[in-house]
Length: 572
Image (cartoon, rainbow, N blue to C red; front, side, top):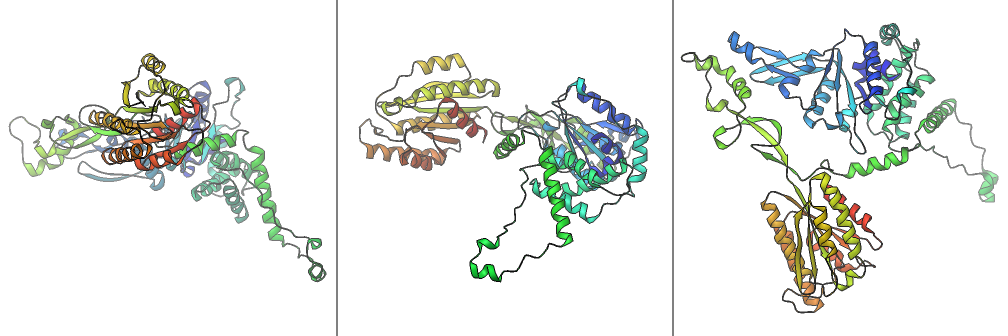
């Protein structure tokens, strides 16, 4: 049904999100869709890292040099006018590509203003977003908001598939009758009520759902949208975007026997609801009941996972932060610059920048085809991620060793297993007795970390200030190397050993406050204070405030809970 809708009026519907792994089921669905659309319809595949000139068009450098005047070339999108574009691995599409598709879907135009050219080309397309994401991987919300249809083939086996119920003749008939299909106000109201009941915030989805209902009516050979089309729209358009379970509003009907006697005697029987109110109530109830009947069983767990992933940063699951680089990393376009500064020259971009100025510069000397000046130089831009290092400062004093030392060791071992996949590193600082010691420099070696953790004993005082100062030195060294450090402090916050080694809780807490304030001022590292005491104490919360980091009391935590808390901070 989704393929038929896309074949009839894909341009009005925006497109379809197909969630499925690469395999025979997805290939079979795409082959059937191409047969319904017709092989004469343009169909282009957009690479995930397609450049701006290839996507939108621009200066045709070879033709321009041969003709001696600017000649433009058509991009992928404009060449697919009134056709379909396929976006493989849509969950990994860069923001530039997704925003460009959104603009083209909104305007049905491709605007080119680059390389001395200013052009507009018609571009009415439908987008087939092939989503292969797992867990919280997904295409951007703005792009999904413009694609009416969404289906999931992940759980479907090849043995369970069947041939499509539609043939190209049905599609051609529906295309001819689509423009004459009408939808009355009551059906539109029902769709809007269903969107509100399912927690769909975007009004664009209701508009697309109404268009989809008209397409479905055209496929059924009807001239008006009926109840059957509303149920189909619910499954194809609305349910994949649900953010909550629908709940019927229960009216507060107060019976006469619940009223005081004098009010019950004078009370009049309630008036009968009007016909319009009855129809509206029945319509809303039917939509809600249909939604409940078609909701997948695991919707609640999926919604909870979606809400959790929405709070995570877009860099989640990746190491470090993105920064610019001249020589290595992922290409991110070009910029004016001088290659003598160490950057890489982009020859084609330099020639494109020089071509529009040739008439003003005059005829080149000798056998040269064009004149290039320093202002035409374009250098390549790159983006790379800095390595992320999590620095653990573990309280190994007598009070903490009694409760949390074993859990801390287990959490670090679990985190090291994640670091091997994420290319992150882990460092370990232990503090007890008279001072703090860097037991484990930044490393990815799981074997080395386990040996270091196993050899770490517990007992003695709590030199908190020394641990914070050593942590500040470690963070500074990592920042100088270009790393992204994360500071995790596991302690009960009850310092009793000062910088000079003397005992005394008041002096030790003052030293810890000064060290924390200094670290807060000199380092922008993210961090977390985990209160390891069996009963959370205000001293650890105050320490988190001094450091300007998050505070997490975990009185009943095990190593897995600690690992989950630290992973959330690293991903934040």
